[in-house]
Length: 222
Image (cartoon, rainbow, N blue to C red):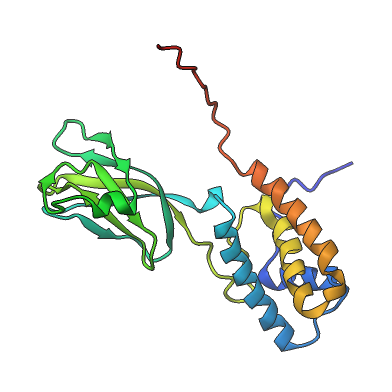
């Protein structure tokens, strides 16, 4: 038998909402239900940011430093910084040098935050917007803060959009939205829909991970 030969299946926002209502045993009949569902979908995206890493939202970014700079403001959709290095352009070729992340208290206890040299430590202030504080402050304009960031999942937007999620999370997204809608429109189905959602999310999250090999070597030194 012939197969389709395509792997492009996706759902736009309106189709996701329709699927979620059907799982609640309902059909969408009003504009209020449509707008309410889109609001719930956006809240679901925010909840996913609290549940851990979503690999498709991890992005590589750089921020050039100027002389004396010890504070930078990252893009407004930045959730957190995963890892970072300092790129040193005084080397040939440019060299990426590891930099340690420190806590708020450690940053607070730095006695002179205006000291200049090659930055060796950074503190991430997870505010709105997210800021990074560097110590020492950059000496000269030949350093670049190079980092991987977690960005927010994009809003649902218009109903003809597709969701900003990896295709493997579509079943989880449909079941999660159905659960959210059941809280408002079908409370008698909430318990079972929540269970389905959590199972779908667990499966997707377990697959959404880095599969590089990791080796642990015991410390046998005395």
